[in-house]
Length: 224
Image (cartoon, rainbow, N blue to C red):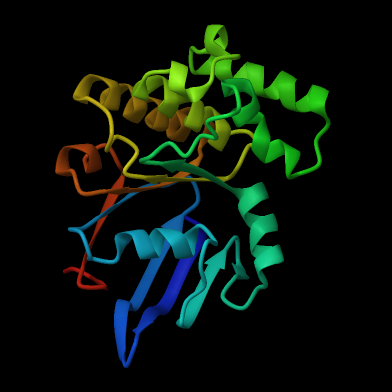
């Protein structure tokens, strides 16, 4: 299986005054194209740091991070932003919807940054909202939606630019168990039917079981 993501001896070290704190210590990891990977670990294990590096939200202190064969470790912020917009879709635990925008506008926002016209954005956003069963809520703001509905809007937003990779950071963390199952079912469908590469951070063993592969992090290193 061809790797779409590769971490090669990656370190992330944060300076804390006179002390340096390593969040990741020499991580090497390959994620195959079309794979569903769960990153597990307790708080402070380094899993969110690893997610930020894979998602081009940060760069390593040492080592290399390859996305579609391109080393992103030394790219500028503007280049990282371009890659994020075209290749990666994000789903966050806190939803991260803009409260002043409607569901339709939230879903269309990633397309705005890629230069799509208003008509293109609205058409695509409505199609995605229909796909997640929220077309009737298209003009509602986040405060008018339940937690589960907000997460479905976030999933639709993640798909706006048809990314190759979906990064889901504790996607069920703020949801009840029934709604969480619905969200996982959506991720599994994206993986199975559209062959999206999915990297999901979770501390929940039951949630992680839905992935093809589980990688456990402990103290900034791959456990086992």
